[in-house]
Image 1 (cartoon, rainbow, N blue to C red):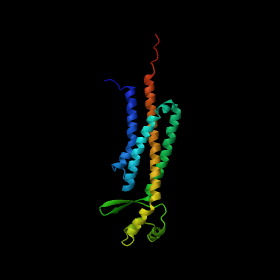
Image 2 (cartoon, rainbow, N blue to C red; image 1 turned 60 degrees about the horizontal axis):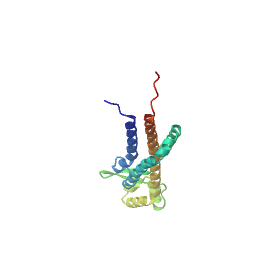
Image 3 (cartoon, rainbow, N blue to C red; image 1 turned 60 degrees about the vertical axis):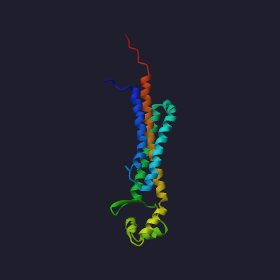
Image 4 (cartoon, helix red, strand yellow; image 1 turned 135 degrees about the vertical axis):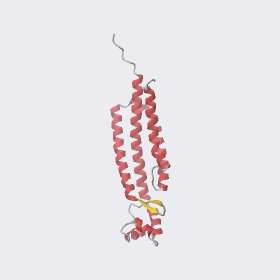
Length: 199
């Protein structure tokens, strides 16, 4: 059985990199990653679109990337990966701190908490020591707390969305850029003429 050619390996690397770029969006859309429903749908669509945009950008700028020195591309990949990982950790911290997961009946409800509750919401929470879950379960003010949370959660959702998408963009760009450069290097190696054999 013939061994796979360098060209086929190069195409496989590009194809796998492209698949990786759209996986986060697919995971969100198919509920493989669980977030509050409206936020999940919003980020799922954006993540899927962002993955496709990154693939297209790498293809469009492929020639420029091909001309860049491997050391420079490597430095870019490392910088994007480190920055993306750092922002992903920030996003995870925000989600763990400001996304409330609570049992409601037989199901689980997820709510985004405001970064800084104000007005009536702040006053209501003070009575419960800042415990959103207890405040939401209160038979008198629970509905009001839920309404105020929905009204004030905009900044939290914005921070989650921006940090998630920025982390994804940086990490996927690092993966796809590195894979593309590797694939081109393999293709170039295949195109190089074999060294003459001395008699």
